[in-house]
Amino acid sequence: PILGLLVAVSLIMFDLTILRSGRTALRPNLQKGVALGLYRTDRGMSYYRPVLDRISSLGATHLSLPVYLFQDSVYTTSLYSKPTDGATPEQHDMVLQEVILYAHRLGMKVMVSPVVDIENPVNNQWRGVIAPTDWTAWFESYREFVRHYAEIGEALDVEFFNVGTELVSSEYRAEEWKRTIWSVREVFSGKLVYSANWDHYDTIEFWDELDFLGLSAYYELAPTDDPTVEDLLLGWTPIKRA
Image (cartoon, rainbow, N blue to C red; front, top):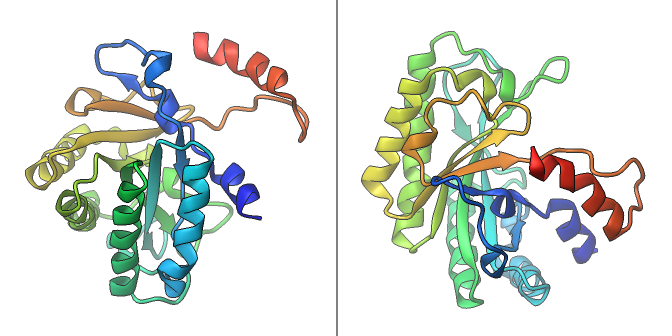
């Protein structure tokens, strides 16, 4: 079951990251990343320690830790923390810190990645279509949470911080995003990335403010549920060349 979970949440964001110079990372430096959702912080490290041991045993070198922020609808302007397992935000943040420390002890590098979710979506609404009634107020609320997690990351020597994930409808507000990035840099000395959606990475105007370009690569690599490695490589090759 743990292996199945890891396969389900395996993240190729690190593998797809492009250096600002435009050069792809050389294979000897390949970052083998796994994303681990903190959905059971109510159980503490007695739950996460064996999961992290398993991730490390699979050869992972990098660990992405999504932290979820919620807004009531796509139109609201304020965000809040609401752990999905019934833990308090304080308990969640404590486990987050313990997970970071243990991942470092296992030799993995860590990225903290805030992710916005919609509490009451209508007709499959998602973070990519938010339309708050006041964008300035929304960004102020968002920056407050992002800085909070950036400060946690800085205190624990986290190597990477993702300033945003798939917030497609917000991306044309480049100045607000630049202010967000600058705000994070005030409290975090590691590398910064933004994770663009797979179909919306070429219109972003704030890439130059970041250290890496991130991509949520939801490409279909094979038409079946049980592809071979060769099938996956065949599906990935034209995407990589594009």
